[in-house]
Image (cartoon, rainbow, N blue to C red; front, side, top):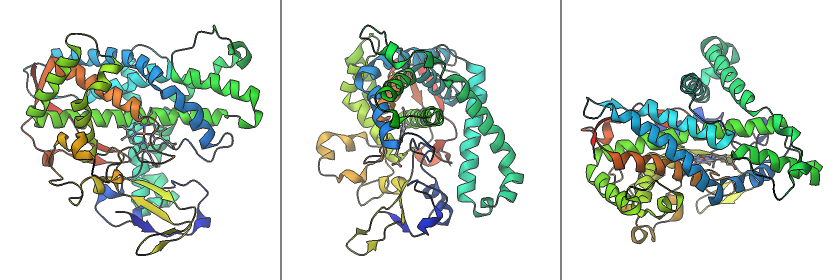
Length: 419
Ligand code: HEM
C-alpha cells in the first residue's frame, strides 16, 4: 500500500524527503505524521549524504556497539535503582526515566560526555519535543504554511526550541579536537577516543588529507550530531515505552522473556553477544515496532518513472509509504491489533513479503542506527525485567497515542513489583 501524489518538481530542491506536502494527504491523522528529521543529507554545502553515511556507518558496527552496551547497562541500572523506590506503590509513570536514559546514552556513546546531567537534560528534552511538535504542526496544518500566521501563533516557541537545542548541540560539538590533525592521529598506537563522533571527526580529518573535495563542513557535522540526537532521544525513548507497555499488558510474554533473560545471563551483566542471542526478546521488540512503528511514514520523491500494474508513477512525484498502516493491515497480519511476538519466529516469518515489515525503512536510506537501537532497547528491557514485574490493567486501545514527527505514547504508567 502506498499513497501517491504529484506536485511541481521545480518547487522543491533535490531533497528527496521534503515533507511539506503532507497536509494534503487523506487518512486519519496518524498517517499524516512524518518521518523523523534524520536527513543526514541536507542541502548544506559540503560532503554528500553518501560520503557522510559511508564515514558514519562503521562507527555503528558490532565492535563499537559492544562497547556502548557497557554504557547502556550502566544507565539502565540507574533507571532500575530509581524504580526500587516505587515498588508496590500505586501506578508509576516510567516515561521520565526512559527519557533520561535515552538522553544519557546519546551523550556518552556519541559525544563522550559521561555522567548524568539530569536537570539540564530535562529542559533539553522538553524543547526537543516542542520542536518536533511545532514542526509537525506546521506540516500538517495548511494555514501554518503562512509565515505571518506561524510566526505569531507557534513561531516563538519554535524559535526558542531551535535556539536551545542548537546551542546545546553546538556547545558539545565545537570542533576543538581539530588540533589533533589527521596526520598526528594516523598512528597505529593512537588510542581511539570512545565516543562515536570523536571517531567521526578523526575520519573526516583523515579523509580531508587524502581527498580535499570530500570536506565535511562544520555545518554538516553539526547537522549530523543533531540528527543523531533527535534519532536516539526520540526513537529509543518511544520504542522502550511501547515495549514496556506491551509487557505490562501481556504478563505471560513478560514471564517468558524473564526466563530467557535468566537462561542467557543468570546474574551476570548484560553484554552484546548475549543480547543478540536472545531470540524471544528480539521477537518482542519486533512485534512492538510492528504495532507502534516509531517512524509511522516515510516518503520519497521519484527520480524516474516507475511502472506499476495499474499505472505509471511519474518522475518527480512524491510517494508516501504508510508504515503504520502496512503494519496493521489484516491482509498481511491476521488479528493485527493483537500483540503476538511469535509472528516473528523464523517459521512464521519465512513466507511473509519482506516489505510488509519495515520499521527501519529500507534501501540506501534505511535506518543507520538499527543495531544501536536494538541493543539500547534490549539492554534496558533486560535489566528492568530481570529485577521487576510490570503490570497494567489497560489494553492496547487505552494507549494514548501522540503523533508528532514520531509516534509517541503519552505515558508509561505501570504497577511495579519485585520479580
Ligand atoms: C527503534 C528505533 C528507530 C526506528 C524505528 C528508526 C526508524 C528509521 C527509519 C524508518 C528511517 C528511514 C527514513 C526514510 O527511509 O526516509 C531512519 C533513518 C535514520 N535513522 Fe533511524 N530509527 C531508529 C533508531 C535510530 C537510532 C538509534 C539512530 C542513531 C544511532 C538512527 C539514525 C538514523 C539516521 C541517521 C537515519 C537517516 C539515514 C540516511 O538518511 O541515510 N535511528 N530511521
